[in-house]
Length: 174
Image (cartoon, rainbow, N blue to C red; front, top):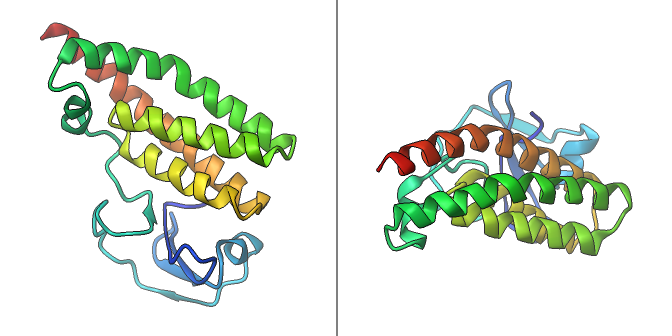
C-alpha cells in the first residue's frame, strides 16, 4: 500500500505519511512523496485517533456503534443501509477509477464525495477518511495524488467489505 495514513496542513504544504514498511516520512507535498523524493524520515508514531485534524487512514476500518447512531439504533435499518453500501460503493469506486482514467476531475471529486457519504452511513470510518481526503485533493487537480488516494480508497473498501458482510449477518440475527 502506498499510503497508510497522511497528515497535511491542507494548504499543499508539508505532509507526513506512514508507510507500510514502518516509519513516518515527511514530504514537502504529497506529490513529492509520489515522485519518490523524501525530505527526511522519523520513527513511527502512535496513531492519535480520528479526532486529529488532517489525518486520513488512522481511523478504525468499521465502527458499528457510529453506524447505528445514523439509524437511531435501528438495527434492521442499518442492515439495509449496509446492504445498499455493499452494492453501491464498489460501483462508485469503479466510476472513480474511470473518471481518473479520463482526467475528469469533476467526476473524480463527485465520486470521492459519494463514497465519503456512503462510507460514513455504514460506519466505514477509514474509507470515509480517504474519500474525504480525495474530495479535498480534487480541488488541486493533482492526478498523481488523486490516483494514490483512489488506491487507498480501493484498499480500504477491500478491508471494510468483509466487516460489513459480518455486521449484516449479526444485525439480522438480532
